Length: 459
Image: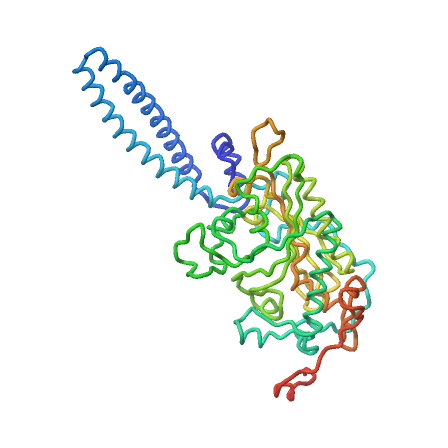
């Protein structure tokens, strides 16, 4: 959550920052509620101090035999106690209201973030891999058709066993994704990341700590209850991203300066109720409800977080560079930032098959495979992530960052389309061949069952 001191002392700056994000929040009412809470808190402290003074005098009055004054003091103490209870009850109610409303306020953008309304105002920083591309077939077959032809992606059976937005990878398709996961973990291990294999279910407290709750409850898969029902801290959700368990593993801990920077990587399956868009967004495995991902999470000292953001971006890029897959870097504008992010770079991979209006001159489309974000102390305040700059100093909030390293389905899409050959096979990138037993080409499999009898070339 945002810093309350900043909200109180710089309300106009906060108002402008939220307007740049396109967020409509009644700050005046929030500040009035905060002021009323502080008044009540001060009044409660004053009344409690006064009652303590009276309580101290009662013993003296008893010793001096001043029975009438003693009775008056006891009566006044009882009146003060009742008033204290009323004041503190109202203060507690306002504090709870403030806490809930503060959880709804997004992170304030860093001053370096370009101001804009939506993704159309994002700024392209650079491209990689377009100057030395491999030769592509005259007609690049989209991954959803190619995956069916090779019998390595089966959406129909995924929908049958689970529902729309779920799919099977089969044979070399499954092997390819396993290879990508292990390859990414090895790349980041060389970058000094410490491996984690976290729990897949996460509780509500953890989801709130990283900013998924309460704002994005509808996008998550809740276990044992409807998303519309009230939830408790211990209620469980399927992991939407490894950012949640990895960030919260240090919740309410105090790390030491010598621990930082702390870099973790974690592979998990991820689950989101993200709705597909029209057209090609709903075909294939671009936008699905379950997907694999390797996540990179960093814990750093505040003064180092923006340098670390640039390093984190480079660490995620290295995966695509070793795979030889063209991509671009976007700097997100204020209106396209995620809820918790102060600054974000998106890595968008090039998938050459489906032409989009906003695609490159070479044709095809861009697919986001990673968002490298600096959350500053936003998540740290929500989750209680602190560090001690020096052993004798008070603990302070650290900064958190993360990036996907990378989201697997869209990397698979780009790989199948970019590395496909004229004969319908797919070349395995050199970097992945050791992870596939030296296999150089994916040639596909024979389909099974009676449905295979009707299979053939697409018309």
